[in-house]
Image (cartoon, rainbow, N blue to C red; front, side, top):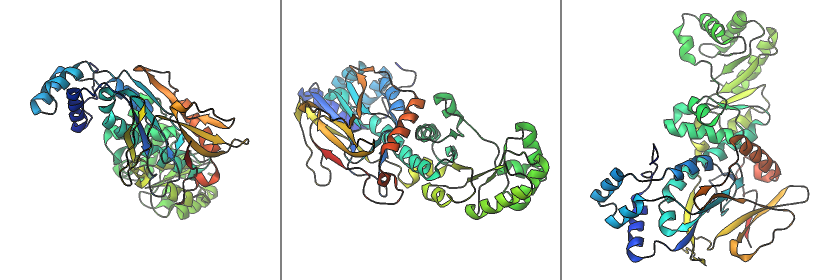
Length: 426
């Protein structure tokens, strides 16, 4: 058994379906489930695939202990037949999906899970909880990166979410281009650069602002960032340069009208001979606030709450639907909740210039032959339960940059509108 099982991170109805399928003999029918969204969150023109790097270990650790099975049986959540099946559970099927960092759109088949009904159905909740969270965070963070242009952004939202969600948020933000995170667990677990200096409490601890700045400089050196808005920004900047000299690395502003404060602070720093001192701004920044600061003399951003809340879209709206049984397409026809039957593959279509023009979704069994500008999006993740070699987080960052560069300009707009690419079925 894994040291930390993920098996109970599921909904009871998954196990109820398992019990019923084992009882009527349908549990071993070969099935394919697909993960997709029927619509992007309001105001979004693209989504970003994220979370595979967290999901694969979670699937590996989806194993039930004897104690857990006893408790589930005693509570009536499963019967003895299901308990016997789950005692030896290990996913032995196939999974393919869009690479981490890949943009996606409505009805993009971003994950395909094939195996027996029994082994695939019990993974639904785990898969959706990981992907819905990480894809939502990645899409929000990617929009902030677009708004920031060449200016770096630091993720600093740990205090605004669940302690484990904070680590996942830092990873998703780094995937799409954030430079660093304040979260040390994310640094240890995923190799993400970490950074951090001081909060207002450190200034308030000391009798004067100058004393606080002097203590921070003594501990962290001249390249540190001094938080100058605890009392009065103008006086804070004056004190910072008096203590540090004109070689101070940076100041941070966390309140007020950031555009106005940035212009005033830049003028003051320059007048004090600190032309090389950078200006970092933070304080509930989302993609729109960052875009509004494009003309301000800002050198870097710190974003927190909007990152960990998905900038108002905390879920990607992904669903996990059965699309094929024993090689036969099955289709859900419920109003406003339809699904397209059959196991599918996604292709990104491009002009000769490299600009993406659309996304084509085709049935796996049709023998589709891609054209010269078609790039296969669905890549193997697990084969017969064994993990296929996956890219590093650094490689996924590079993949995201390249894929975003290929999107047409209308797909990258922050304003509400139609999705930047159309998904068609071939």
